[in-house]
Image (cartoon, rainbow, N blue to C red; front, side, top):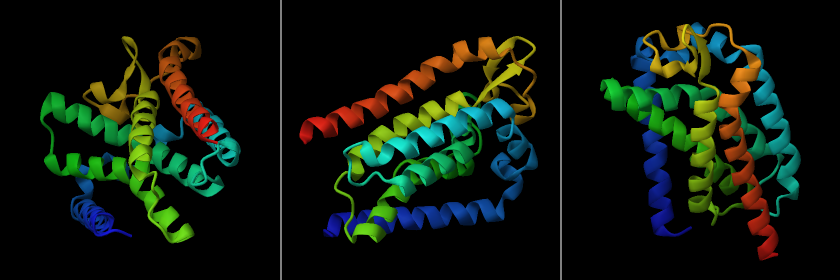
Length: 209
């Protein structure tokens, strides 16, 4: 592994350790660790969409043409994204709008990058003994999917209809009943984006072959 990639890996590992330390020392600042957030993720429609996405990614992984995409990384990247993306995307939105805690922003960015890229990098390094040559392209693709997932699973019912929960003062405590047909209208653009991006990867590797 080159000196540049070694340095990059050391930096992101230290960044992740710092994020864990911040969360451990400031648990009350992180909705990610609260029971309210877990209940939010366990709403039936979110679990159904997550289940379909997880099965789809795992099933197509070995047939994608990408040798670094297998059952294992497809599964754990989906799971970590589902757990962290609604919170991380919400934190970044709220910082831009409300100038919230910079520590939460730092942790959100680390979770985003770990879910979309660094966990994949580490897995391939341990599996194959080399840092994945696709790390930069994966970072871009997976970040787009992470962003889409964060917005998709942040959809929630409110008195005004369907909105993104991070736009509401109560955030994850605001998750009222929804019309599933109306929800589908709002969710469809994010679902289509994920399908198109995944399809583009499969097509591009097929052309290389």
